[in-house]
Image 1 (spheres, protein in one colour):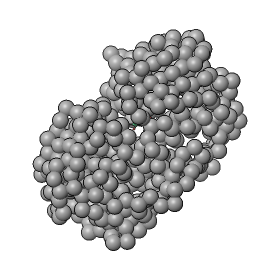
Image 2 (spheres, helix red, strand yellow; image 1 turned 180 degrees about the vertical axis):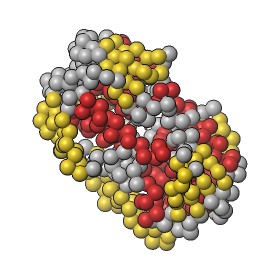
Image 3 (cartoon, protein in one colour; image 1 turned 30 degrees about the vertical axis):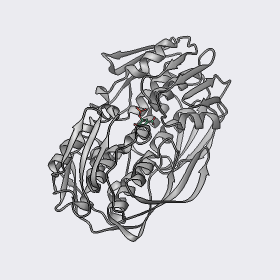
Image 4 (cartoon, helix red, strand yellow; image 1 turned 90 degrees about the vertical axis):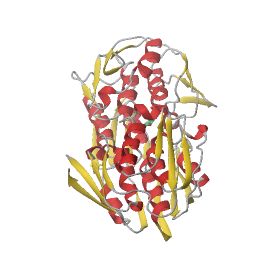
Length: 439
Ligand code: S3P
């Protein structure tokens, strides 16, 4: 099995660029594939998750050229130009791909089946199947989990849906299906979730209205092809933001071209409330998305109670926040984050297991975690940690090595390639001492 050996390092410094945004890359493939004309997408994330979406779009009849690993030219087939793959579409580890494709494919003239790896086959799919069935779609799950079977040639109609969870994947699946529905569709969420779909749909000429937590889509005649540079993934930058706070050199660590969509950046607010010194430099736009450079300096952090309204804006970054919290003075409380239980792993259980292995006093909660921070100095003992095959757990514990008394070995890290190709070499370039090992 593939593992990491992360050795304590003194400081991180320099300048870096993280790979493209995963959420935007998935959406760019799907929306460009059903647009009219050729879309030119630069900064595409060539990770396993996004390559699963790319392969699926090709299997559905979309021609996609790759002049370089991170640039793709997508020859859109129009709203009604997809054709059946004739075989199950394998989404690998990608929950976003499976949920968004469920929406897109529920409106097509042909049948489809979606499958995934062992982790994805256990994840909840009824949350998308239910509203799609309300729209008239034929979507079947296996006791709530994949395989997802989708019957084609259904006539979809618009709905007014009240989402029980603040999920961008559910919202996006409904919006994709509603492109084909008769009448408008509205989705109302209980909290803010990432709005990349809405932004990109608007760029493609679709009328989408966002009023507070309610999003309404008016079915278009067609989608316009797009030219887009995908910003760096904030969720990938997050590991290095925390690295810079825990061990930044005096001149700081500069992370360039980071997507700063406000529906994604809850971690910045949380870390700043803990005393984190993070400067946003050179703010600009790339297409419909804001981006900037982040300069992060070593900071003495203090524990906080994380405000509920920041949870859905930081959901993917909570594992690495737990690492920062272990290095803060005093207690940090995260609650209202029960969604962590149904990510690529049960992230509360996985983080608790690793924190225990590294001698961090903490208490896993049904919907979060209480962590007793150690303050300045080493917060982690060193030891063996299991990532449970979850990329964000693996990378979070790699960052913990910056404040560990002894090396941390991390088991089962192959899934880092699902979101962050080149993580180890990039980490090396700014001073972390992480090695790939056979476990
Ligand atoms: C994503 C939405 C989030 C997030 C996931 C990516 C997306 O999931 O955790 O990594 O691209 O829409 P939920 O929608 O389930 O919160």
